Length: 217
Image (cartoon, rainbow, N blue to C red; front, side, top):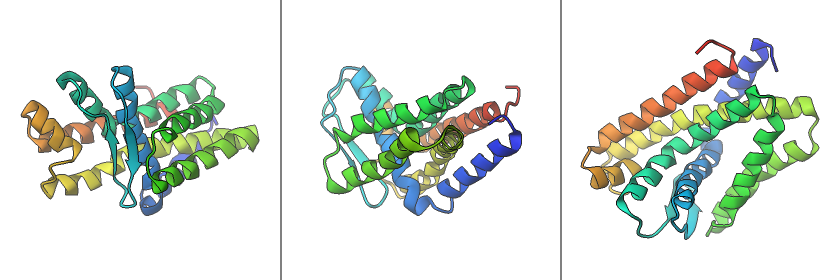
């Protein structure tokens, strides 16, 4: 997909999925969010006890009691998770590996599925993973390439879109949101952590989007 028009079209489709259809697609971003917590907890040597995705669109990853530094890192990883996966997918696309985007995404979903502990959580992973598996296994290469671009754009745009929900949660004084947890861990106000998340996900979208569109960055 070298033509800029095709990449823009993929971005438009992803925008429709991530913005007007957010009510239905937010669960895929939540899975990536909780997967970010779980992935960094695992590489830091912490046990992941369970993951849950709620019908409201939120989620929770239970890692028990962890050291302070690990707690800060894995808490940061949640809202940055979709954007980081999106940037990884961007690199794979630019190196000519669209099927890798699909199969790696599917493998990550399988890993997350092992820790899901509610029926709705399992259903959400099956729904997302089923689509990706079908595209990776049965779709023709041009369709795989197009879908991989849409998926990567969706992760990058969805990473920013989730900030709107986080804003209202933070404004409502939630004591369980990731910014609130980071405030307790670092004494830095939750509103500043909200800004960190917002700027980071927006930067990932701009940088990843520029790379996908072959702009010089």
